[in-house]
Image (tube, rainbow, N blue to C red; front, side):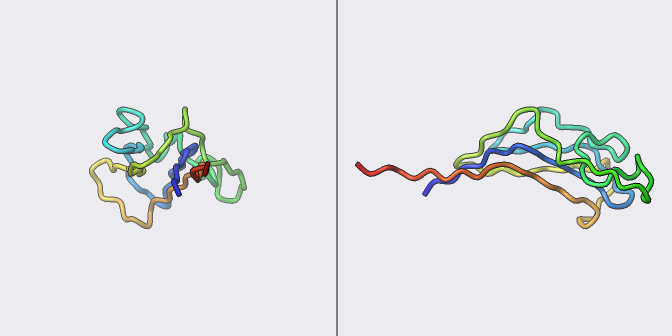
Length: 111
């Protein structure tokens, strides 16, 4: 049984006043995209879910998990999402990360 993941979307949101700096995917030894994606609290292109603080907490506007510019194929490698802070520590329960993609299982054909 061989599994591979096609990583299609990544979302990062903060609860509270977290000090995010940038986010990137690390697949094998390489960072995608190079230089990362700047994800400051008020300028976060990877934000998903309720769009607070852009909309008041009483309004119910939601955003889907953002799609990556191009899907990333992970096979026989370790892939992870990396979130960096701006120098001020972030508690683990202040950041919520979501990803989506497709898990593909390839089996060899007999014959």
